[in-house]
Amino acid sequence: MNKMGIKSLVSITDYSKEKILQILDKAAEFEKNPNQKILDGKVIATLFYEPSTRTRLSFETAVNRLGGRIIGFADKSTTSGTKGETLKDTINMVSNYADLIVMRNPIEGAARYASEVASVPVVNAGDGANQHPTQTMLDLYSIKKTQGRLDNINICMVGDLKYGRTVHSLLMAMSHFSPTFTFIAPDELKMPDEYKMFCREHNIPFKEHSELNEANIADADILYMTRVQKERFTDLFEYEKVKNVYILKNSLLQNTKPNLRILHPLPRVNEIEQEVDENEKAYYFEQARNGVFARQAVICDLLGL
Ligand code: CP
Image (cartoon, rainbow, N blue to C red; front, side):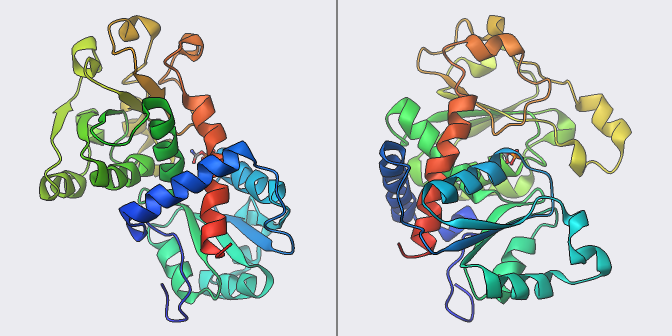
């Protein structure tokens, strides 16, 4: 909550366990009936300072299906930011126009700053390598839907665990539900120490490996694949070294648990072979669809509707 008493969703830690469960129940209701007039008369601003396909379009679908209207931009080069306008002034201005702001920005902490200056709720749609809380809500929704529960799930996170903001948010959210983690990453992209410290403080068991092989994923309920985040590398030579470090194929999935489901926040580059799309354990496109319902629930909650 900011000085004006406005609630935002900036980090998944803004939500208690009870709030997470309440939002997931609300999302399930929206999945049954996504077309309603709840946002009639409301204007939602989507301010995307970084590229996006799913997050922006699923937010906009969520609002359109609930009868609200959208303003915003998908490309910062079309805004007065290019003339030197500050983020503070932009957020102040947009607060005059919209009832809620959804913002993606490459700078870690930009969403928190925006939430402090805005006079309307702000939803963090990704701030650098930091957090992506609505992705986490749709990930939790997808886990609950596919596993029938959130408690005692074994999650194997694979790929870019250093820069992948979705794994950071998911790890923190799952701390309410007694998870077990396996982190599979090359040395250059290991889970940052602060998140491993978080696991230790919350008595969450985790293992670390650098190989994606049958043995390391044998116990997983969820295989959470991630893309190597090219845009976060300052040295593209370093990116070239790790970009194809893991490639998931059907052959690797043969002895996995029957209930295993493969999640990926998308976009995918090379880390999941196209053949896996037809595997019954692939769930990433349904996961992206779930984003509409989770985001409808988040928006309505923040607007008190
Ligand atoms: N998952 C996700 O954030 O996708 P986009 O970058 O396409 O929004």
